[in-house]
Image (tube, rainbow, N blue to C red):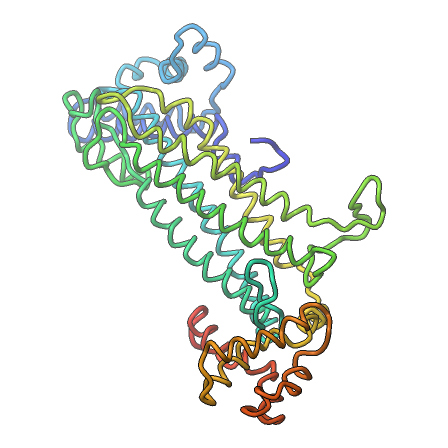
Length: 435
């Protein structure tokens, strides 16, 4: 995490003070449950809350203790005992460190998921707004980067909306799957702690009990979570690359907003570069890179080892903070995107009508021409236009084989741009629902 690509709402989830607060709540709720089933005195459980509930944990002091103990949870418990006093003997009864660490990570990831879902909601709102704004703005569709057939800029935005709707669904499922609690003790047998404690803590922390843990929550859950973040990041990149291509000088159908006083280059004062979407492409690479170590964490030794620990201390904050920033940045790009319908129209006309070649092909087949012959007739008139040697409509009209099958009026009708947009309403209804 670096401040340049971080937002405070997400970074606070991963700050030491937040982590220690969650650790304390796990321990304190466990004491409440132990008191409820008669394992420890009720007044002791209450005293733990009274003495520590509003404490600001001394991170430097915990670090100092850890330098001696070489164990982070023990260092925290030692610090906790310093102001709880005698009742601290009841803290961590029958628990193991992973009960605290894994349950805390589940809380942090579920909170992070909530922010990411909200980020996607904001992006969806921006995409929907721009989709309806440009529902019928004609533009060229490209395959292989080459002009294909007409579409609308609204359909481009609608496609992105549908993709991020799926992203939201995946995040909701990833949040559900990661939100489990394990308070099951050493090797997960509940030998020294009642399963009712786990159920109580899970309820209080907004989690569900892990059906069966070893000494850790199974890491396939975490792998699925980070894989989901990677897929969402790939969707961010797909849309970012679309905008980057549209901003190229030779295309210039849309571009990132360029604010007053902004500079594009230290050397060339004329430059207006797609820096935000280029940045998003880079950030997406980082988030995707964190999915592989999460998957490698699944295979732990027997009931547990800590080979996953160092990985998660890094990818937990980094993946969620980075994706949070990327989604917010992409939302800003879409909201402020400058769209040039006149350039879209110029680009549509750049190939002299070739974008209507399929309609001519199909019309000839409807007149009884074989598909192979129709293709040859259309292509022999298209290739000169591709080389800049004429206009497609004119050449077709001069071709005796074509004119024998299609009248001038019929040819003219085949070059009607609006033909391609007759199902836009139906597509929008599928994506956004019927009005």
